[in-house]
Image 1: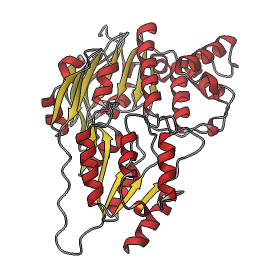
Image 2: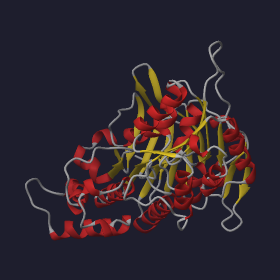
Image 3: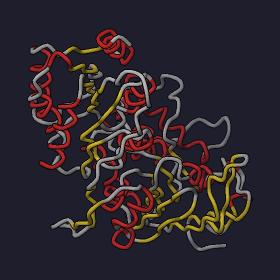
Image 4: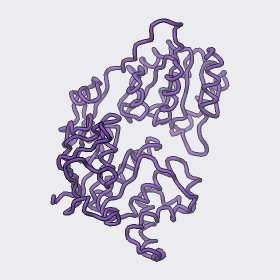
Length: 425
């Protein structure tokens, strides 16, 4: 067997006639953060599921340490590999420590109550995940971001040498994304864990990962350290996006800046012209909005969105024209000009319930300058989770829009009904 913590050797996984992974060879080493990147449907989640045996390979082998994965019992696998999926039902409304204690299952004998040692592991997992202040809460009371940190704590309580994380930054604002990935980096280093983490954002992967494996249509398109992997050619070949390669002045890490607005789908021939609606969102807040607007046959544009954000990935999938910017960087003047052009072409603006920080505040600033505030529809921010990370400036702009005639909707259904009533749909 391989000396690596996790090793794929020419692994192919099929779902019926469709090949999800094709001849994949990949290794994750102790103490390493390995980022999986690739477009939607490229095989990232399938690879993680195969790593714990939820998907069996049609050919090839998967090794965990010195053992083949198929030769391990379920409990033995759980001692070796901890997995945090993209989404999962919360289940019972347990106190947070009891929920995190689920991670101790592989180490506990049946019908034996938790020990003091288990309790100590749970407290340490909450500390390492940054969720220790949530210890007196019930899981149903938590916001999406808080729940994500508690799920991460449950994974850490498993104390497995291999940690698999599928899009762990979903539902987190920018600050908490950076905080969580910094903690992932520390856990790999301090605990010699092999961490495999699926991320949409190549620039974020370059900042925190030792190595990046890029999947494209189920195959390995690139494998190596960020400096060797990130290139405009890769972005063009795999994502179909033109970009420019730059290096951070302090860390000297590479990052890619997109240079082309996504191409929209051709308009259907015949019939009246479609109503143009521009969507401002981010961090997954626009995914359902974009799909519903396209399904309702609106002509849709979006942005500015960070490249590789889940909303920009959906916009790319739907071929929606999108102004994109490098993640975590302030929106550039060129991108703001693209946003202004979209606003000028739009009959209405839909604003998702997305967190606002210094990097994306320019979206609201451009919106505040739009000359038809009565055509702006805002989804209500979910309380009480914080969303304004600009010292109050974002909330001030939003309140100003409402005073000038913008409409706030409590749900997406209410927003779409309002939109349809205005344009006869």
